[in-house]
Image (tube, rainbow, N blue to C red; front, side, top):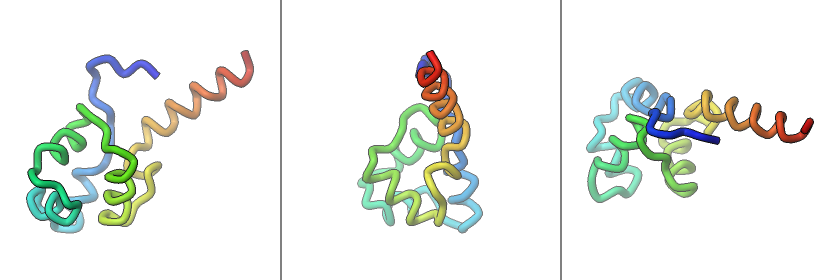
Length: 85
């Protein structure tokens, strides 16, 4: 999947704010030393590692699909396209 410099759409910030967590508090609960990685994930400039994706899902009470809906469907389409080549 080609992402280029486009942000990766996600709902991390939306769900974090809905739970009333500041970035600093959420970062602390995730075991991050600073808010920088969380900011980057929320802006869509980077993706969390698998471990942090699991932690985000637990913290926010959501599935990866709910947090990264657009990415999930893009990857699905890419795989289906290859299946029928």
